[in-house]
Length: 440
Ligand code: FHN
Image (cartoon, rainbow, N blue to C red; front, side, top):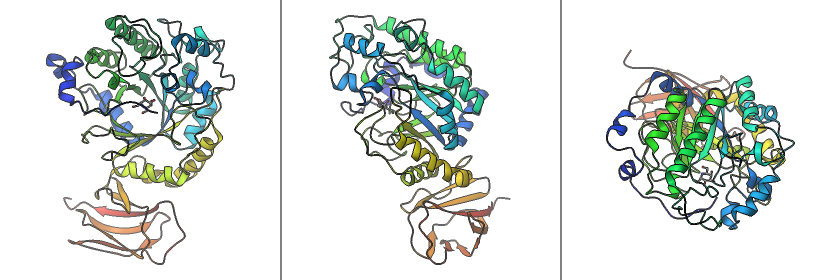
């Protein structure tokens, strides 16, 4: 992924620019119980599979290849016609996610190249009408997710490098040879029509994952109207906006790209953390879309530690794969998902269904909690006694994840837990603290 410039525009200014001022702003603030319940489900879920897959996968150079190589619309259209993922198997994809311990899938229904990976009635530039594939992969995924009990989210790019009405142009997509002209309102109508298709033709969705508004920060995105449409068609669906701004009315999740909440190694995660559910999206190597040459894969241990660190920050991890153009998943990704899944089968309960614990994330590790149980995740600590800052509840018992009791001392100065002699390296040494809230 590459794209220009930092976005420091403040949310308040945006609210006006994108049509969320005045009554619309206030009208969006009531969150109905169905959506509240979905938010709690989301907080519990903790782990999801992100999938970037589309015409760009054919070139094996990431999802920005159209922009990065200045490919004109006509030539890209030709490429799109050759997309034929004959080995795509929804059951395999969903099973892989499920075995990894993931609870949801977020897949690109349409990325910035403007090609619809679903059967759309409002354009022929989609997988059913433009290619010889003859199947709607999102329909198959939706059915399979429903069968296996995972929720499905659709990534939807608001930015479009193909549509003539995406005009005036934004920061990107200027070299694709489109005529200088177009009607912005018509483009917004087109987007709303596509969203309506996605929200009415694919069963109950987890939500819509929006991306790309940053391409035109000053445009009127008619966001209040689009969000109202989503909420009207599926009252339980969540809106996850990847605009890297403070959350706006109508939105349900604050998502951070390539960073844990609070960190900003990627350069665009400058917002402060609010009260909405949190999510971190992360590439498994350095690319979102399939790359033939990117072999910089994170190890399974690194992924597990990031998942645990995310949970300790109260966030989900949305871990990406970039399937190949034939529909198969790179073996490096399959292998890592398998290893993470093995860890999740044993330790998943220390992460899923939890909330951030009483001790804020530290270099040595994090804490999570469920009810009166606190999970101390030791990620980098090599000494026989672990020293923790004080926590409010009284600790009744401390034990290893395997059940072995540990001796501890608790005072107003803090907690010490005797870990005993150094053990073989564990990716995450989980200590369970059973506590009794003082206010009982
Ligand atoms: O430009 C996209 C990029 O291709 C990818 O989809 C990521 C995923 O979070 N989001 C955008 C950049 O913010």
